[in-house]
Length: 157
Image (cartoon, rainbow, N blue to C red):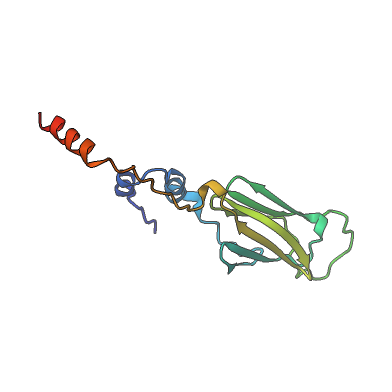
């Protein structure tokens, strides 16, 4: 069953959110439910996130992380050097590619592979010009009473 969302009301009252609307309206915004490889996404602090992905059987050389604008791509491809004859193969070794959409200003801070778990650290880093800042309000110098009276008489005339 397909559910369609009418975003026209949002277009009428929002400016600059085109990328989000395109993401919601596109049919490919939800990954296929293949379950491979399993992963968790967690928030570990203010503006800090972690993706933990179970990639048992893959070495560091067989994994690729690519950070594109607003997109993180994690791919794995096993080398074809395995000449063993398997009686049972229960450890998944198929190639995969998992895509994660990233918000503006989210950067990959680092990645670590340990005991079959790939951990990717993400951090939102707002540029200095995007951070809130206090704006000083200047005050006009007070005019002497005589100049104020003359200005009021000119406006009345």
